[in-house]
Length: 97
Figure 1 (cartoon, rainbow, N blue to C red):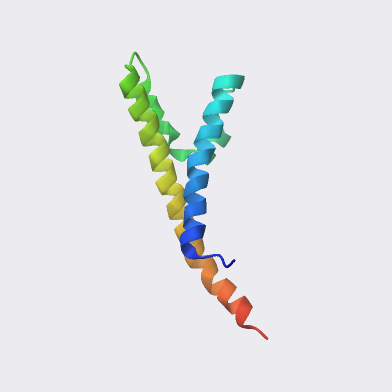
Figure 2 (figure 1 turned 45 degrees about the vertical axis):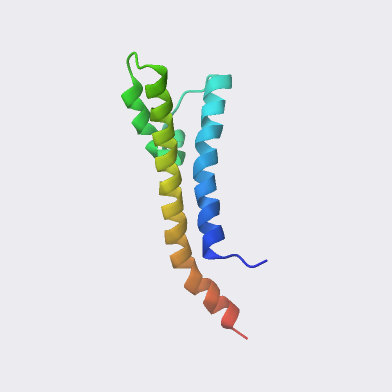
């Protein structure tokens, strides 16, 4: 099976979805606080600072949905950029005898 740009970008977007979920599960079950590594892996998590104070459940759900959605878009954009950079390199490598 040949890797296409669509599959590459989809994989990056999927990573952008799964990483926040794993970090939230780790935080919820193991009470591990967020630090620099989490901010690097989930850059849009700063949006969650808007939930400080006594927000209601709907505001919490919307806040998390927005933060995770923005992360998916960011990761998909990184996938697109990396695809555009790596595609000529891979094409050049395959064209050699």
